[in-house]
Amino acid sequence: MLPQAELHVHLEGTAPPALIARIAKRNRIELPPGMLAPDGRFHFRDFLHFLNTYDLAASVIRTSEDYRNITYEYLSNVAREGGVYVELTASPDHAALVGLDDDAHYGGIAQGIDDARRDHGIESRILVSAVRNFGPEQALRVARRAAQRPHPYIVGFSLAGDERVAPAQFAPAYEVAAAAGLGCTIHAGEWQGPSAIREALKLPVTRLDHGARASEDPTLLHELAARGMTLNVCPTSNVVLGVYRSLSEHPLPHLHGSGVRVTLGSDDPPYFGASLAGEYALCAEHFGWSEQQLREVTAAAIDAAFCDEPLKAALRERLRAH
Ligand SMILES: [Zn+2]
Image (cartoon, rainbow, N blue to C red; front, side):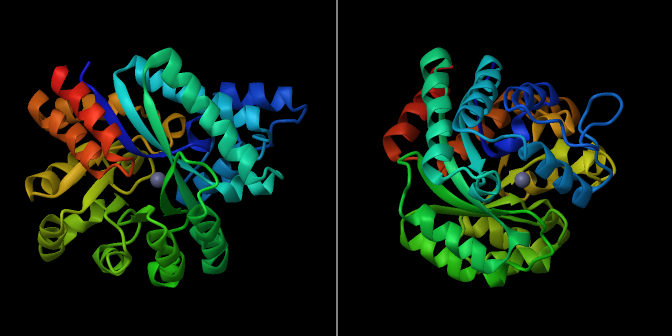
């Protein structure tokens, strides 16, 4: 198993229905109606419905221990399939909706990270994400709290949610995050095309989550390559949600072939039937990528990671030694 690293996965979105059901039972709450399809999988028709189902599942996650368990189970699964590093996107807005403060939220996640490291040798850090559709003022509040480093595992700031809310409005939040030394990334180029990506590039970001639709604009691709931007691409997520009709239409090989740095992410794995190792396998099977090319994907993820240099050096050594 080639060592893998993942920079694009949403923590609440890693919990499969069975884990959500266990947590709901422990918290003595009913599963939200409409969350599951008759076959027991998460139920959603399109992206906005997916965001709604995600919020329903997140609403049963109530305690620090819940966050610890979700983190531990996800990282353990990734480690068993060869994963060595994950940057988990955490959403303090979702935690606040159930009354969890930052200490309980990040404390639970950090405990999961520590336990997974002890048991499985995998490393992980936290990206703090604001939710676009909660608006720029709320994003600024999230960025300000993240900038105060409520936990030392917090290494970056991100923006997720409904991509139709334009990036420019979030410039103040990004300025605060960047000034505090947090790495910055943003969801862009999933549902919106090249012009929205260009707008996102005005923010102090070094990575884009998705970014796939940059493939529609050769000049933009050239700029992304020249700037050394890293695109955290999620092919399975894109196909399941209908950004592309099939893998054969997915532009990942085109992005990679244009010299743009790419990494692989599972985004919200049980929702899409995805996994980090699965995304690597898919690139080998559908795009014919060699082991050397997949190694370069992991190397790109380590280069673009927001963790400190000593950890990066240790991760590079694990990759080299494999
Ligand atoms: Zn995402």
